[in-house]
Image 1 (cartoon, helix red, strand yellow):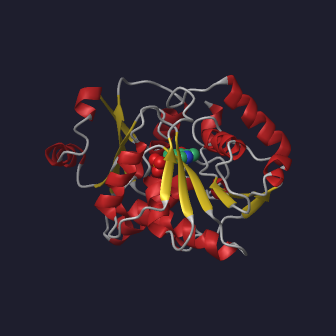
Image 2: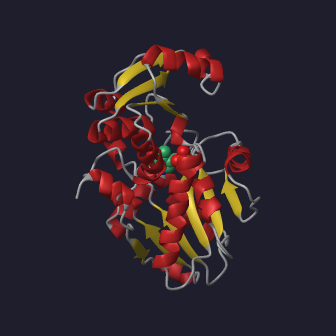
Length: 305
Ligand SMILES: *Cc1c(COP(=O)(O)O)cnc(C)c1O
C-alpha cells in the first residue's frame, strides 16, 4: 500500500498489556499503546505522535495543492526530522527554521539528507516565530508554503491525536481510567484531551523544567477546542533536570524496562513517562482497579544520537 493511503486510513497500533508484579500488587493494570510502530519503515523519524500530528496537515496540504512545508524547531527536534522525512516520502519541499547556530548532529543530518532546506536563526529572532509579519517574511523568502508551528502543534495536529482516544476505546474491553502521555509542547496531550469521553482522565508528564506545561495546554485547549475540559492533569516533577537531561536512575529504569518487557524507550520522552508512572504507582496515585494506558509516542530514531 502506498504511504498516502496508509495516512488516510491509519491502521490501529497494538494496545499491549504489560505484566509486572509491582503493578499487579497494587491492583492496577498497565497497557502500552504502541504508536512507536506507526512509521513508513522501522527507524523512520516520521513516526509515533509525529505521524499523528502531521497526518491531517499533510492531507490538507495535498488537497490544497501546496508544494512546500515550513516549520520550526531546535537542533534536536524530532518534529523537524519527521517533517523532512514526510516531505521526502510524499513529495513536498520542506524548510526547517532552526533555533540557534548551525550545527551538525544526527537529527539535522537526517533532515538534510531528506532534502530539507535548513535555515538557522538566533534565539531572539526565533521568539518571533508566531508573529504574522515574521511569517509573511518567511513566505516571501521561501515561496508559498504551509507554515506549521513548532513541534507541529496546531488544530489539525490535535485532530490527529484525538484519533488515538477513539482507537484506544475501540481496542479496550474494559474502558481505561487514565490515558498517559509525555509532553513537549503539550500538543499531543491537548489532542487526547479533546478526544476524551466519559470517565477517562488524561495524564501528562512534562519533560521540561519550569512548571509551565499546565498553562501551555490550557492555552492550546482555549485556542483549538470548544468545550472546556477538566478531566486532565500534568505531573511537572519528572523532567530529570530539564529537556534532554538524563539521570542514571532514568537510564537504568529504561534498561530494566527493556529487559522485562522487550520494549525500547528513549530518555527524552517515553523513558520519563514510564519512570513517572512507576513512581506515581508507588505513591498510591492510581486507585485499585485503575486501568492505565500509556502512549509510546516513538522517538526511537533519536537513540542513535
Ligand atoms: C515530540 C515528541 C513528544 C512530545 O509531543 P508534544 O505534542 O510536543 O507534547 C513526545 N514523545 C516523542 C517521542 C516525541 O517525539
